[in-house]
Image 1 (cartoon, rainbow, N blue to C red):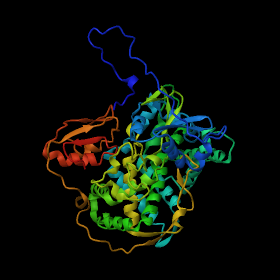
Image 2: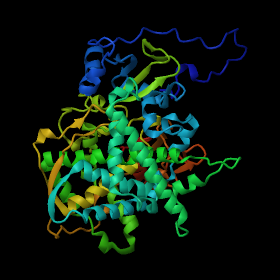
Image 3: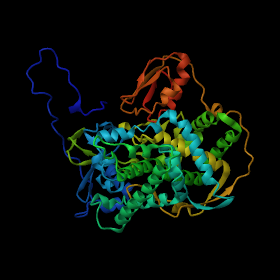
Image 4: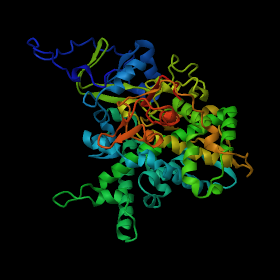
Length: 567
């Protein structure tokens, strides 16, 4: 399928063409059907606040691949199923604009940042060097140190709220990795409490008007002003200290325009900080909490994961080889990784992804006119029974090589898909694995509430667990099972080469360069385009193992093997 809509595809003229007025416009199609059950003036808005996943599922059950919802006059056309969702994710920014679909997030991020920025500014923001594969080894060590610091405050036993614990922890890990360790040392628990107030501002009523005089929006605005105050104090202290090593935000604050004025205001820097923490902290904290809850609900899976982790070597005994071995070990713990993937499938951080239609969007026999919104629901997609048999069951074995249900790139979409797949997905997965490697090797956990009491608050567009969500913990015995070589023990065997051919889907590639690190003789990064270039599409047998690792660890699943089994 083309990455561009039909009307944007280039056309090569034949010799001596007949007279033509150019490409014929699309004849148009019928309008998508509208879901029943609208309330006068409100449409489906109340259902969105109360039971959004059931609302989206009803679109699929009653209308099929496409159906329109009405959120108090804002029309959102839902696309359902792999084929329709692929059309959504592969559409160009010029056709379906992500930023224009989220104006209600501007009071949180601020003016001129993220969804209020220009398309070129948004593309530059995605090129965060700290998310590149060659930075991941250092991140693994940084995350491990932060988890150890938080763990030191737990004591031998007790009870904790999962959302509070993981929110604070991931605020520290994300800021240390993505911004800088010096900046992280300035952060206190107040930051995660302020973030929690900000997240409440994503109430579905923002679809109507994000500036309504409601308590939840007033609290959002107070929280943002407080963040500006807190960060202003941080930057003043850092600027006054001559021993400070400049980090990301220090550098950005020092940039000047031609007239000498500051390139970025403190308010814009605050917006950048909020956006990075929303991406690297909010979604990870919720997924971490749900992963532990699901493991405790499924003790046989938890036992398998803990047994796998107990075979890992002790980093204190590894000496200076820690950076490489710790990073490699994190990549080769399949049982834990599959448990996290299954938690993401059942509890995706975002349940609705939207785009604004900039030019009429045609899908099969339907046309969505410019000005409307189109959306997909990861919560519905991740439970499609034709793609995920017994979809309500927590079953990490879905992601074994034999089943590979996550290889359905436009069905398994907790990170999105296509050109807008979460650019930090590889970092998020590594962060989650590093957290659980430490916690599960040092503590035993048990649920402290009825199983059914753990649930998400779906009244907010940024989904989070309802509090309280508490567990009890107790320190484990120090002895662990012996281990030979963690990464090597878990690594799959390379099979014999037989007509291997590599293809790269450039629509999916985001320039993480993980493949370049695994197989530098096969892949190269075009730094200008931020896309991978194949040095050869038919590597010899000696390179097969490297290529298999490149495929396995590509965060966006952009690389495919043909003529041989994909790992």
